[in-house]
Image (tube, rainbow, N blue to C red; front, side, top):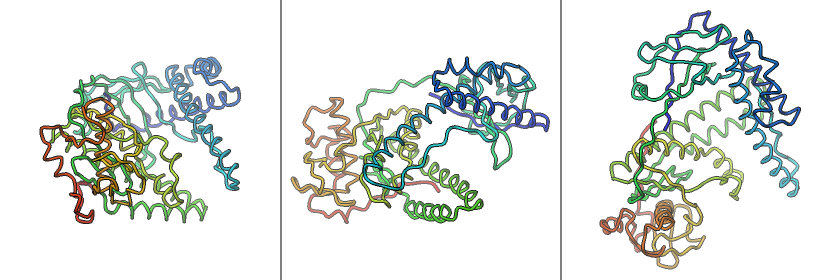
Length: 423
């Protein structure tokens, strides 16, 4: 289990100039490796090292360890570039078959046009949390820099130091160091008490303990960002492009804050109720496989569900709770009471089973299915899929029934509780 500590550096003018020079030369090595790989078709990291290292082997240019680090970083960026290019090629072929004239834009190769974040390892940097001094390799040798750490990060300073990234913030016009600390993985228990969580766009998350994690103004904020982005893109001026870049940062920070708040509250609720496992649905390739209209696809593209899953996983691990992924097939169409699968059973937020006349909120019904699917896949339930066993265990069977809306009650009478906390 890893944790990242953000450190603020106190630099003199000479040290700041040295780090900027180091970052620029680091970017040169990065760009050289990218160009060499694309021109020769070499993808292997060892071959890239042999073909480019001699051009920068002069120690006065950059320390050898940073040259190797830049090559590794370029190799990773090239791998991502080729993966995206292959996906684009497949999608363009489908667009041509469908007779579309407006094709996807080509993907630009990795390129650093300014200061590039430097990746340090145990050989190229050292840190002492007692004296608050960090040593970084640079073009002027190893320089010692005082730093300050926020009080929140003190709890992580006793871990094993793994690596660090020197990052330059254009907004604040200063350098930061993100230090990665490693801690031993906690032994997670065998799944006994499972909490199913259904992720969505309208309801960010709905858990099988009848909790809804909402952000009422999320849709309006997302629509406002989307509308402003469209106006700026149609404008196309330099000022509009600068505004687009700023807008992207604002939107990313907003979604990140929302995902942090939702994942934190899910884990907190699960820990208070004694759950040892959180089951979530596998949403990989959902954007490619979904058949939606233009407006719905735009909302789906802005949905950062992968980030929410990442936050949920590491926060749960810290609380001694494991997160498991299950198949998302038919979780929205199937009845959690009798197991009957029929697509028209779900209409918006309402789920009505045509087989057993069971009614409930559609997302809540899906969370029950996710929990049951995980238990069935692990052989944790002795009955069939349609058994009405308790999600929390057979010892609290009545509580399970209370979580449902009774079959003779309309869905409009079931008002979800807004459990979202945060701005």
